[in-house]
Length: 171
Image 1 (cartoon, rainbow, N blue to C red):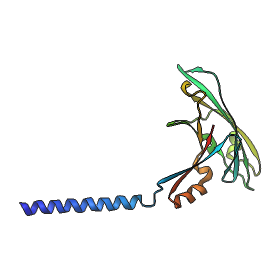
Image 2: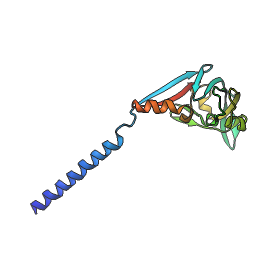
Image 3: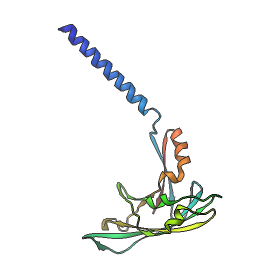
Image 4: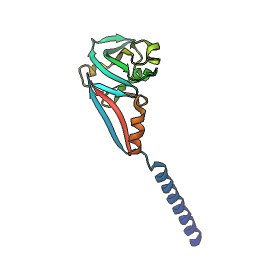
């Protein structure tokens, strides 16, 4: 009986060690540090084949929408294609507005959907997004996080250095 118990313990230890080695192998090379490049309103933000400028961020008055109180937060930006090819900057409308751990996304606003999908070489387009935020956030500092596909070469480069790279704008 004692021998059988020893074999069971040895097999359990062997499984635990194998599991630990596999967990290490899976997580080896995963970025462990964050590198968030932060910009401000009015600064030129280099994207892949484009240049972005957040021109304005304002809060409106409290509104009632579907029985809930919200405040429209309006974000205005200009993006210019800096390449000699037609590009898509449609991922800009998927940017996240963040208040600490609260994230808000929107598709509301004013933009030429066709033009942001196919922005001609050296052309410029204005995009206005309207986020519905909770009244408690009105007047608070927010951050806008840009989709990583807009600057993927920098994301890949940083990941090879063990870092997770992102771009944000202090609003």
